[in-house]
Length: 508
Image 1: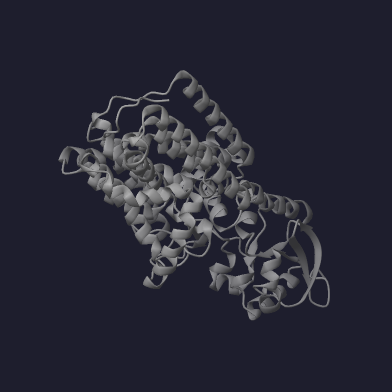
Image 2: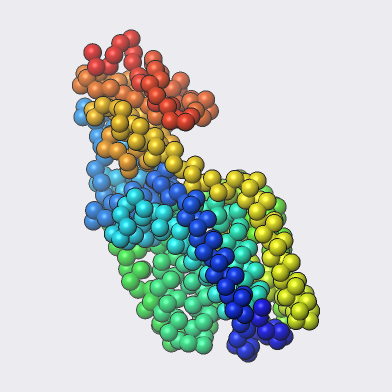
C-alpha cells in the first residue's frame, strides 16, 4: 500500500503513499469509526469528573467562576461547613467567596465553545466526538513524523482508536482523550519545528491547551525540550504560542483559588513510593491489553539505530516522564481504566512500538511480504481489540452515564419545587440539571442531620434522598449519617429516591 523503500528517518525518506484503493478503505474506516463514536457517545453531567467539567463550562458561559451555594435558610451547620452544599466537582472557594470548580478549565472551554454552536444538549457529545477522531488522526501524524511508513502509521492509529481504554474514555465527558490530543499535538509540533520554525508557535499553543486540560500535562515539557533543542528561535516561538493559554491559566487560577499557578486539586499530589511496585506490575499486565501485545516492542526503542536517536529520545522521554510520575500515584494501579492517566503517552507507546517492529522485523521483509505482514497485523489488532472491547463492555460507558440525566429528570418532574435533596454520587448531576438545593449526606454528622430536619420541619419543606444502592449498603448513608424513617417514593433503574419523615410528615 506504500513504497517498498528501506525505512529511514522521515527527513531522509521520500514520501510513501497509499494507493487509491487504500485511501478509499481508510476513508470508509474513518467514517465507520465516526459513526461508532457518534452512536455511543454519552457526554452527560454525571459523577464527580463529568459533572464537574459540565458545571464548570456553564459557569464560564455565565462569565463567572464563583457561585453562591444553594443554602437552606436557618441551617447553621451549612453556613459553617460549606462542603455540605458543595456538589461533586465543585468546592468551597479558598477565600470564602462561595463555591468554585474543582477541575481544570480546558475541557469546559471546549464545551462552552461547542455550546455556542450546537447548544448545551449536544455540546459535550460534539467535543468528545471531535477529540476522539482527532486522537486517531494525530497518532497517524505522530507515527509519520517520527519516521514510520504509511502502513505502520496506519497500524499505530488503529491500535489507539480500537483500544478499549481509548474508547471507554472517549464516550463520556472526561478529559483523558482531550489530554492525549493536545499533548500529542504539542510534542509532534515541537519536533516538526526543527524543519519549519512556525511549528514552534503551534507547539506552544497546543502545550498551553494540554496543561489547561490537565495540569500534569506540564510533564510534556521534557520531550518538547528535547524536540526543540538549543534553538533560541524555536523556544521564543514556543513561548509566544503559549502566552494566551498560559495567561488564561494564571488569571483563572488566581480568581478561583487565590494563587497564580495552583489548581482546584490543591497541593496534595497523592504520590508515594509505596505505589510504584504494584503500579509497574499493573502496567505490565494491562498495557498489552489496552494497546495490544505489540506495545511490548516499545522496549526495543533504544535499538533503532543511529538514524533514529533524536526520535527515540523524544518518544522515550515522553513515555518515561509520564509513566514514572503516575507509577507513584495512589490510584493508577487500582483498576484497568485508571490507566486513563497514561492516555497522553498512548501515541508515544504505540508509535515507538511500530517503529521498533518496522525497523527490526517488518522492514527486513521484501515489499509484498511486508504488506502481507502488515495486513495480518491489522487483522490481529482488530481481533484482539474487539475481544477486549466486548469483554470490558467499553461501548456502554456513554450509555451508562445516561442514568444521571434520567434521574435528574425524574426528580425535576416529581419532587416539589421547595424540596431539599440529600445526595452524594448524584450531587453534581442534580446541581447541573435542576435548581433544587442539595446537601451532601457524606458531609453530614448525625447532629447536623438532626438540625437539618428540624430546620426543614419548621419551614414545612420536604427532604428527599437520591442514592445509589452502594451508598446505603457500603457507605451507610442512612444508618450513619441520616437516621430516621425513609420511604421509597420512586426509582430510576437501581437509583433510589426516598422521602424522610420522623414520626410524621415533615410538612406538618
